[in-house]
Image (tube, rainbow, N blue to C red; front, top):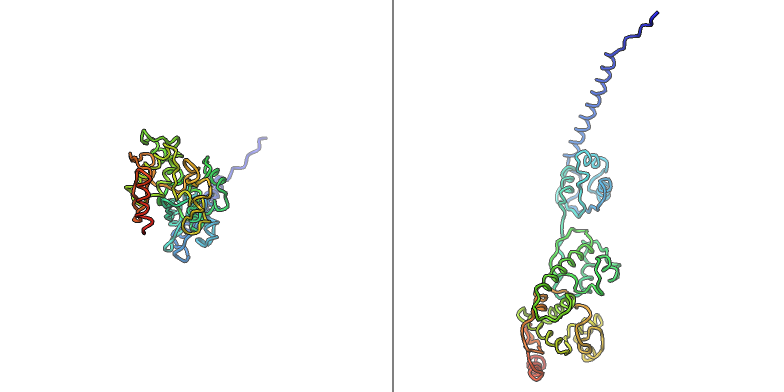
Length: 341
């Protein structure tokens, strides 16, 4: 005798499925309404407000925002970021809020990288000691290099040089607040290298310098010796003439650099007689490194010196110089412009 199967209650199954789908739809609507309300409601905060976002995932960013008081809770912001697809677009940097914003507006700001910037100027003629002091005292930079030795800093930059001196191009740079001083130095060094490469490629055919680094050293002497733009190429010409005949450069800025922080006011006779690697009165040839940061004009002058027979120059006191071919002419200019002041 065949056993009859009980008819399945298909109507009950579909009614249950409909209720479940209706519940899911209701939850989705509730979540959507909640997200809309959250996304469009201004955050309660004090403005203006500065805050920093470090690199990392969206959860790390949300936690940073909570810690800095930008948002109250990480989870709603995290959900909004992930549902909107902006969780992969958040950019590190320093930000500023001038008025209350909604979570959605905050997400837009972070995903667009609408960061605040600072301007940092590297000054022509300043030396590495001065630059490093300026970097370390800037409250808006992250001081990653503060505890590095010069050798460690150069290694981080991937530079093979005996000193950081002169390796950075003087200019005004715009960087994010809170960014690394190492990143700023890397930008400046890359620009200096590009400038030096270009100047070296365009050098005069009669320039007898052996390497771009020697050109950088000579340019730093020109930078420190000249107050008038029109004198740069002539000063470079004097230095080139002296190098060619083996005459010592006898340039005071190099001596001052070698004396360093121990210099007490003006150069004295004892300073000129005390031998250091930078004393161009006691040593022939170029100093071992540049003595300052150099600009475009000094680089161009060093590699395209003026054709001159002069071997001497003396400052007139107004920033310009008098150039002489002989020692007698030079001594006469010294008496006129230095001793009789």
